[in-house]
Image 1 (cartoon, rainbow, N blue to C red):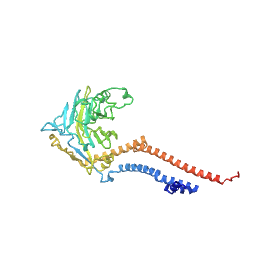
Image 2 (image 1 turned 60 degrees about the horizontal axis):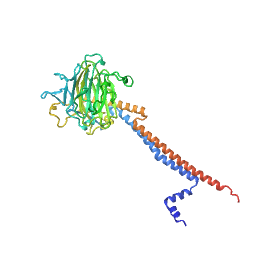
Image 3 (image 1 turned 30 degrees about the vertical axis):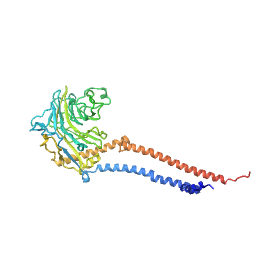
Image 4 (image 1 turned 180 degrees about the vertical axis):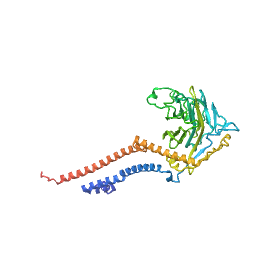
Length: 455
């Protein structure tokens, strides 16, 4: 008597094997088909359904972003808080101390009596002028930031290709000193936004891969490298992004002021730069990126504006620079572009915030709290523009990757296709195995029915 065989037969696995061996061929085939059906329903189809559901959610989010202002939900709001400790505006100087509010000035900068602007450089050669913020922006305030600069590039030269050198807005880790890159040091840490008014060399790369026209806005990152920006080729190799600026020099009438707006969301790695050359509310998006490294914009950045002329020249006037941060209505930080889109559907009056323990020369600085209706109108225009740009980004991602989610959606689909192929292969092997078992049993039964001759 085989005790081991008896024990194995009484085990759960042995009972299953014994039960399966007693099944007929038809029962085994039906059992295999039932197993394949259940496996498909519970596993493969659930993945397909979840993938389709995700696409539906994306389509739904696009639909929500296109809802009119009247249909917006009131529980999603964004407030724009003015950082008055970083603003640069008229009146620029404290009359009691003869120092600038919030900023340190230097170089050949001029401030005329009763003027509503500061002139960084005049319309003459070999000049440098700049202003550098005394304070840095707090980490919370810089997480969702908007900088709006009002300026004017003008001069006596009628040909825009015979002016130079341009101006720059700086977002850096520490206050800048005077240097040779648009008047500031070349080894800065952070981001320089250069408006370059003169092409320094007619190099071959301009004629082939680089067809940009000047004046030109260029994003130039740096992490403290001396001489990273090369003047001789206008930073062609180190440029992160940029665009040509039309009608930015001598725009419109004598009192026409150009505008530039920077929107930055750290958690979303989102940077957008809009330019309104004529100052008439006709904003054009110059740069829109979703891949800005978080270490590029410092968490506590200083701001600066500078301008420089060489043998060629133009005047650069700064009328104001207003710095704002975005906050949810409940005080939470704005962390995504979708939050910004949804929140700006409600126009809120602008608030103001003073920096704790700010320097003494910033007393008496006026707030930007007036004009709630105009702010609501600007916010509506901003919302519509952001919505169009959001849809345009998704359209470009869909064209490039075949999915509105961009590279992540494309990669997820690729992984799912590979996984699905493997699973279908496993199912085919299992089905073939059941067919093989059925064939063997059928063959054995046919052989057993054949007549056996006498030896």
